[in-house]
Amino acid sequence: MLNEIVKKLFGNKKSSSATAKNRLKFALIYDKLEISDEILKNLQHDIVEVISRYFEIDRDSLELNINKSKDSSALTFNTPILSAKKRKTS
Amino acid sequence: MEGKIFVITSGKGGVGKTTATSSIGAALAMAGKRVAVVDMDIGLRNLDVVMGLENRIVFNIVDVVQGKCKLSQAAIKDRRINNLFLIPASQSDNKDVFKSEDMVRLGKRLKEEFDIVLMDCPAGIERGFENAVAAADEALVICTPEVSSVRDADRIIGLLYARSITPKLILNRINPAMTANGDMLNHEDVTDVLSIELIGLVEADDNVIVASNLGKPLVMINDSKAGQAFIRIAMRLDGHEDIPIQVPKSGSTFWRNIGSKLGFK
Ligand SMILES: Nc1ncnc2c1ncn2[C@@H]1O[C@H](COP(=O)(O)OP(=O)(O)OP(=O)(O)O)[C@@H](O)[C@H]1O
Ligand SMILES: [Mg+2]
Image 1 (cartoon, rainbow over the protein chains, first blue to last red):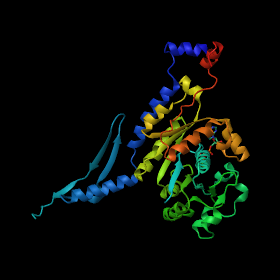
Image 2: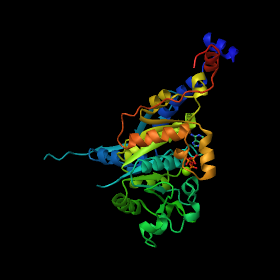
Image 3: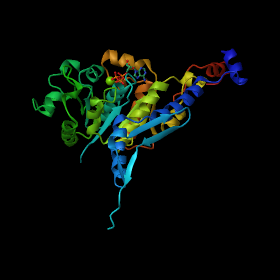
Image 4: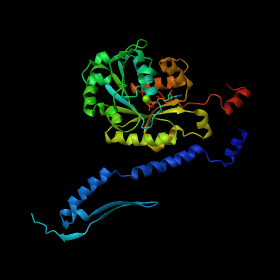
């Protein structure tokens, strides 16, 4: 007991609860970066819809990906453009 | 006036949902409210044994939803506490036995009959959770000061927000000595990472197990610290928000021993 108090006074031992809190903060952030397949599918559907208003695209060859690296994550959308659509003047 | 439905949920299993439901329900009934506690853990019912009412089950919630009996026939009246009723789960069905719409309909009827309805949610985030939450007006999330429990609570809080419910937190099974030592997350750590309003702090208390052994309401055990904490939570739920949240203090720590040796109380 005394040993522990001495350790704490001299800052040798980081409390395990502080470690727990830190780990939790990061875990919760990472948890929220995860996107479900369903959301991804809906997103893809919406993006295709918007892009097709302006371009002819090949709907089957497009790719939607989430690339995770150590400290960032990026959403990439890849599609060959066949041609630009002529916009109707309203 | 129409009643209110609270769901008591956690994500992670075994953190105290059933204990909280029975204790808060008993405390509210003792304060004069007409209370129904509903076991939504279809297939794994427990609220009945914790409350000591297991021998009196004839009908259950599935019977009510399927129209096999009236609500009043399934509601078991507690003989020790006036105005406290249990609606048991069925032990033989699966969690997908009914849909959210069934619960919304049942919820409306419960609110006509009772001032306060407490739904004891099963662990997990599947059908059982969906059903328990479907009819809820408000939610209490319960977790213990452990990493896995807090993380699961965060997931549940997110799911509740998605349903426009802003839950409040009960932190259960606090070990004050470990907290004082820095070996357990304290309530500020937990509310900080979860960004949620606290409604009560409950310490680990052997009386919880004694009460469930006896099938006796925890809040009727006089010197139970956990029981007292649940009573205060019930009062706060009942609109007495001025009742302060007490932080559990360790009874026999090093410092107190030193203190008493030096003649302090
Ligand atoms: N404050 C406490 N002090 C001591 N023991 C406790 C406390 N709260 C709960 N327990 C014990 O923890 C165990 C789990 O509690 P409980 O059944 O209430 O959890 P639950 O969340 O309903 O579990 P499940 O997810 O299985 O439905 C029980 O054995 C109970 O006695
Ligand atoms: Mg339970």
